[in-house]
Length: 395
Image (cartoon, rainbow, N blue to C red; front, side):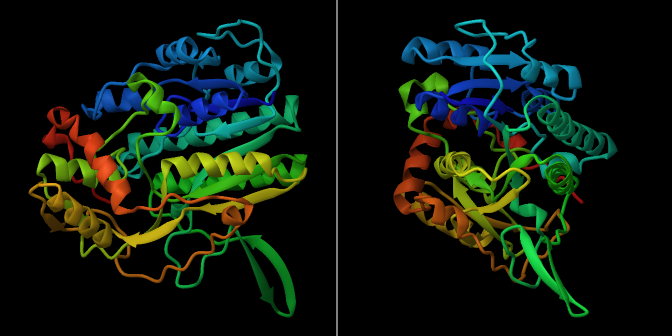
């Protein structure tokens, strides 16, 4: 069995990925320090429903399926803790069998503070974002270099690294001709937040490790994710992933759905012309699986643009409003002053063929999909706290 180590295993994408790979009979270990949960507590941000902690969910998974997901709780900014995951000295906080899982064939790196608004609240949140995200990536890179150079690192990047250039966005790389000579460089990037800037720095760190030590890395430039349920989470409601609907950690489609159910006007920033590429949570997991099945050669950096379809924010709001009205909700759209420094009308043409070429079977944002999500969110309508939906973090 292949051995997979998932960093950030308590998160929105981390836990569903852990169940997916465990269900496919991979040996799975998850690591987290509950940073996202702790930030939510400090900011008094509620999730749509309560989710058991990582240890409890691993126990539930084992009881229901007989499959083991080992759990290690610890701060990945601690270099010795990271190295313990590779040198066999790690102490698991839960495991059906306590012996060391072994060197990972693949590390899936989700372990970052993932919020642009949080990173821009003040210098303290910016510092936390920079220190956490970059030190964790650097610790991982050195652990792989020192103990397991054959390990494939799959790092979750973001389409936000590219910004909105006035030329086509290629998949990570750009050939340039200058003064009669040609070379290939990582595509120029211009992030719109401190968080997105740390993701650029992640890429640069790992590209250094690839060039210098022959590391094998796949960098997934992912668009905003939406969705709640995966096949594995349907086994038991306690296995659901975390779900935020606030402006700090909630992604736009998930936020709009909750706003519609709560009778809160859909918060469209500015005129809503911002165009982005979106992806269903089930397709995120597909993309990670395909990346693992198609690893780069030693000393190569694969970069894939990971999304399935593009929308403007206003298009999303209108689509969700239309279905909300069909379902009997009183749903309005509110065009509010944009709290962010970003272009609202811009050119956006992105190459994203590679994952489709590897076999990605997209789940598109259809009326059926949205109605299913409305039904799911509607079950927790009484839990929604309107006062946390929008606080207007500005930059």
